[in-house]
Image (cartoon, rainbow, N blue to C red; front, side):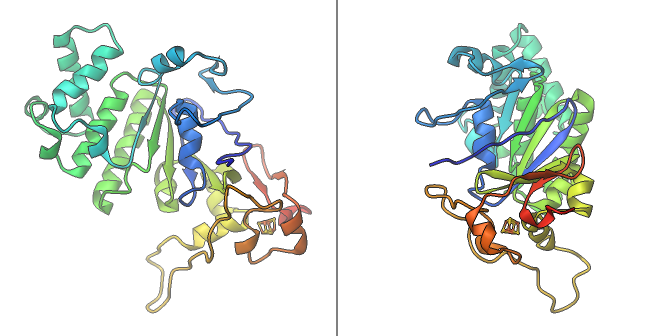
Length: 303
Ligand code: SF4
């Protein structure tokens, strides 16, 4: 099974890029491959993977392990599973800091308090003595962000970091990511199924479907000049306050094709209102609309 095919993108220093797609589109697999944390039986092939100009292809498992946490790090949807319920928040944070720095235990403790304060946790001197279950979901996600940023990584990958949170807390966490990106100039990749989330914080977006990037571009290009029918359908599915009474949100009928036996043609054909016979027989190539904007669809060939 090929979970991801031909994926190509770049994230600049201090930039937030969103990867959007339905479950199973390959967005998490792509970024886990970048992190080198896929299961051992996964086969990852790529021509080039660079972090701050340094080629990662060919690094040994040990060299890769050293990069994780220090130079690139990943946070997940459910903070409770990433935290040890039996250890105090402070000692978990200190452990990460000590592992990736030359600080003394006392300095690591001070840094842990400073990081908790940075991510908006009140009275951090007290909170470091508490256990994860004494924190709310939003506060636990803040702790994970503090942990991820404690070593000032160049790349932070956030996999659906706000999906389990209510909308108010979700907005706070997104604001926090944006503030931290500005303060630390960390490159952030935000994985989400929610176009509303990427609109708030991302400067560029990749739309994934069936293991392929269907369209990518700057946020304005994707929102104001979308080219791919799948992107357009995702945009129509965003909840809006402009909906009139009785008007329903548009959903995308059907399901993505199997990755075990992917179609020879366009993978979106079965769900696409514009599909022609050719779409079922041939895989469309990318067409560039600007230096930053491209999409794979036959519809726009003549533009
Ligand atoms: Fe739709 Fe054809 Fe474009 Fe695929 S290539 S998105 S099926 S029009």
